[in-house]
Amino acid sequence: MDSADPRTYLKRKFPAIALALLQIGVLGACTSHPALGTKHPSDSAFRVALLTPGPVSDAGWNAAAYEGLELIKTRLGADTALVQTKSPADFEDAFRDFASRGFDLIFAHGFEYTDSAIEVARSFPNTCFVVSSGSESSANVASITFNVDQATYVEGVLAAGVSKTGVVGAVGGIELPSIRLFFEGFKRGFLSVQPKGRILISYTGNFDDVGAAKEAALAQISQGADVLIHNADAAGLGVFLAAARAHVFAFGVFNNQNGVAPDVVLASAVTSTPLAFLKIATEVKDKRFHPGMLEFGMHDGMVRVVFNPKLESRISAAALKRARQVEHELATGQLVLPPTLMQPPATK
Image 1: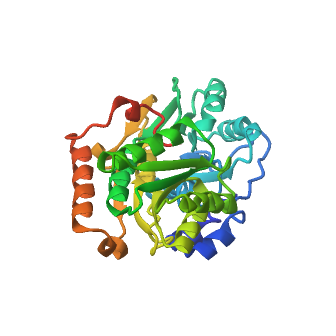
Image 2: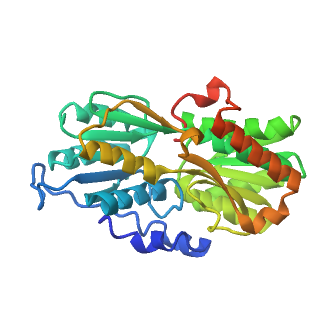
């Protein structure tokens, strides 16, 4: 996929759900890789590549990474490239292709890329590899973690303030440790206000099946859930569809998804993925980047909660005040989540 292909989608800042659903699958095309060792047309340029596990039309996880790539292109004048890997078998090939062509920096947006990055990086010491939510680092491999569980904790507090049934639901894609951590933050925030409440958690087994996510959400609603959260990438749109159908609330994740379903999404747990990517790319370009286990959170403004102004009138003043106070306490260090919630990987 050429890095310019999804630009129209992203500039619209998340269209209506129906349009977003039509785009799923359309924007997930792969690039065709030239032979290894092929020279790039502009060998002197700073080159940055991005690997994503799903389409950048998901209005969330992958879209945030693509915005970061575009920001690097705009701010640093970098030559950029993007590929959506279809399966783990593609990981090493994609890494080797970009590294052999002299790319300076390769972002791989997902925990699942860690092992391949570590393996390939040994053969390409002059290329920096950065894995989102990765679990290891090396001389030229960095792993970045966003403590997004801080934001989902705030969303859990808010959910407790609006739930009338005392039951909330969470729908995930693949059950990864980081997604469990993500939901654990939401659960603890919810139970801090409603200690006798219940959280229903289910996984669809993939990040693409919108219908499966919708059915999972509807099943939770049938058990009394009146507030939902997801960590399912593109499939998360199915959770919003279920919430709209049942007239319950939901939360957005990773990107500001308030505009995806403005009558449903109370707030979004947002990570500043584009700014983090730009920071790293700038340091790599200036030859002052130090790979390692890198962590971002509310304390540095890289994780935050964006409330949906359209629905604030549906939240009691007390519930909104409590959620904002908890957010402030997390950002300033007055409230520290238990260590089990702060261990990486914190996203996916």
